[in-house]
Image (cartoon, rainbow, N blue to C red):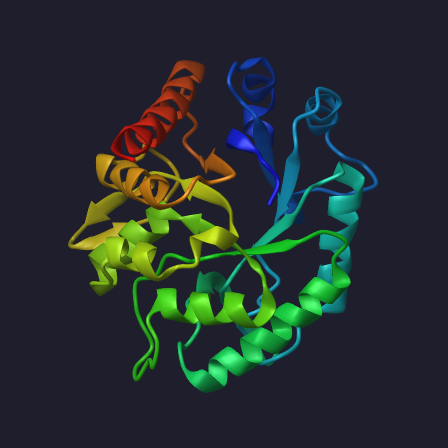
Length: 271
């Protein structure tokens, strides 16, 4: 996978902040928020400086029973071509069925039958895209009954069958550990990290025993510790900070990038 460095999720509310911030090596943009024929000026400026820009889809729904929508795939492909992107990322999630939108990135049932469907959907997506595809593990507040595989096992078998890249969100691993009891470090031991495309880091909060992955606050130390654990096992091509609302000062965002780099360097000291 392409070497990316440390980056931040581009949002229109942060455009000037990101343009003037030191230490940003790449950015990611939500694909559904842009039109390839009329890219935001800020993204054109960043591309002109040589920063990679990755389209990040949130609505493809490779985890559903229906094949991926050709129009959504075409949009992702057009975004990648317009931005000169090294890859496209999406979520391993269920988002719609029978024309009904879930309104959320839901976990897929981790059964053998589900895996066969997802493998075919991922292959269709790969065939339609001009660049490699990476899939992200999602945050969940519930699990489906009678799962046959853990999340990490499901992803590992999907990677083996399709060669798809991994976008590992360590905040989502933390979420699923708190909400579902899925041990995050054990997941890192199972995931095929040699297929790692990049990593997400984000903040959230706990309320009444449920972790909410809101992307509206600084990353808790537990999430950064998971980043260190990941980096002790593999060198990620890129690590990206997500912040989606309640935007803080430039100084807070810069400090978050510093905290990410520190967590990565701690892993280097352990090797």
